Amino acid sequence: MKNKIALTLLMLPVAAAPLAQNTGMSTRELNQALSRYDGVIARMEQQNERLMGELRALQREQDRVTKLVESQQGQIQGGIDGLQEFRNTELENIRASFWGSGKRDCKDLGVKHQQIKVTMSPDNTESVRFLCFDGKPLLLGAEKYVVGR
Image (cartoon, rainbow, N blue to C red; front, side, top):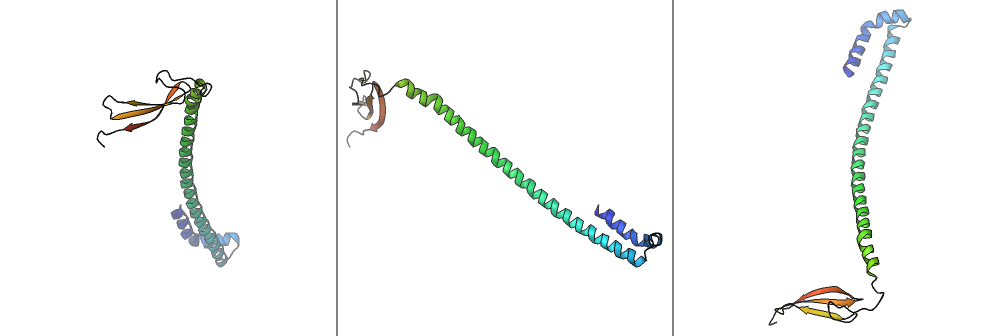
């Protein structure tokens, strides 16, 4: 496009004399008018280049924001999934167990309510501790023993 404009501007002085005669303007006035138009065209080209640069910057920023939003949506969906899993498992387990509603003994462990039982391995090197709470054994942790220390 610049080449077409430049070619047109180069051709204008050649056509200026006949054009000046038809419009009633002197060649000098016509050349001044053409110079003004040339300046206007140059400013418009500069403004066009600046606007195109700003448009490219906005497109890059839009791409960055789109990726950020997609990332955030993935994290939000993961949080929603985790909350739903918690609702479906943990809360229902707590409701179904009715813990704390009575003081029952742990028949499996052979201990009374809120007593701790330690179970040893056959070689007496490991043990597991359980707490009896409302008829259910709770694993408190594991201990490992080394014979001779």
